[in-house]
Amino acid sequence: MPNNTRVRFAPSPTGSLHIGGAHTALFNWLYARHTGGTFVLRIEDTDKERSTPEYEQSIMDGMRWMGLDWDEGPDKPAGYGPYRQSERMESYTKYAEQLLDAGLAYKDDGAVLFKVPSGETITFDDEVYGQISVKSENASVNQDGTIKDIVILKRDGMPTYNYAVVIDDYTMNINMVIRGEDHIINTPKQLLIYHALGFEIPKFAHLPMILGKDKKKLSKRQGATSVFEYNDLGYLPDGVFNFLALLGWSPKDGQEVFTRSEAIKLFDLGSVTKKPAVLDIDKLNHINQEQMKIMDPQELLKIIKPFWKNLGLDINSYSDDYLASSLQAMGGRGQTTLQLAEYSDYFISFDTVKERYKADDIKEEIRPLLKKFYGELLEVADFTPQTMEAFTRTWVESNESSMKEVALPLRWALTGRKVSPGVFEVAAQLGREECRKRLAYYNLI
Ligand code: GLU
Image (cartoon, rainbow, N blue to C red):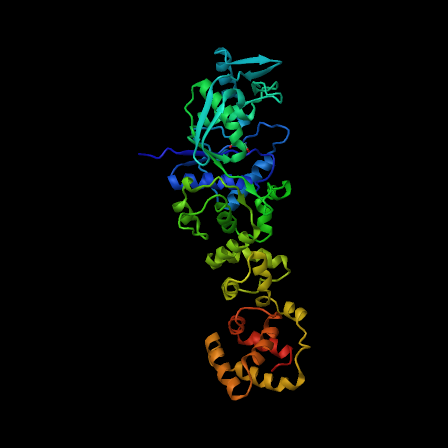
């Protein structure tokens, strides 16, 4: 039997794709991909003042950056379009008339209002929050506590959110609504409209609130951070994907780092918690680092290249193989792509090394010993980390020196840094001639 699970992500194009939106989109996508269902993108652009085509584009680009592809949407029409609310006016008018004819709505001042009944109990089983029951007279209230009828069509004919969402979810055959917990409060109003129109009710799953590290609601600033800013800050799409998936959910066995296909396989709405999720940047850094480690080196290279360029490094004279193996040689150092690009600069440019390191710490009395050693090291038959290390161990023993004495200045001369991957790994990656050049510059051979 074909799977007919249909979920949707319904952003308003009044801003870019920020963390909250990306989180909701991701959970819908995971659910659709896990169940083999359909993921619909619907643009809720009824706020004419604040909606723009640029934001719509930016949301789509943000989703693409995260790797969240949709099966139906404004650019991918299937049988349930149009996929922008502004293009679906006919159905809003049609059902408003149906409500008016049935006496369940009335006109006032040019607007159409839905009559909120009293004495009914609205109950729904949220897949995450469990059973929620609200008395109809409490579903929509004025400040003084009296029932507030729900405007469904505004004076300008535009539908309101709580009405349009019902018409669209019904006419688009959406059978699972996954969205942020801030919409729990809207659900009873929507259910009243479902009942009034005799529509079949979808399932609902509200996702937990996302808090800042201070355990307070995400500030405008934090919450508004678009996914592209995460790119510029050095986070991989896979890192952000993995991190967001862990906000409110984790696989049953507690696995924290996973690929997309693992996430799809493991995802289960039943394990989503209602406990607010904390946006912890340290954790994002950690997850991002782990994702960089498991990423295909050539793919990682594509992402790192622009960061190197931004650092003013000229990568044109190097082959992709050399650049990718330089990243490999970093051995998982760096939590962000930004850091990885920065930490690995010495594989691309000796100028950066010269700027950082002036060799004024080298005592003249030790120089003859260093020169002798580096001269011989450059002649080892096989310029691999293993051979160099074995050679060095024997050499320091028979020359009454120590690993530290010879390896530390070598690291400084090759990288201009106090910390780096194993110095022989670095030397092997740079190659014999480049090492010779750098040691000669510092008068160490
Ligand atoms: N346009 C609404 C929003 O961005 C959609 C809410 C819903 O998914 O029902 O919050």
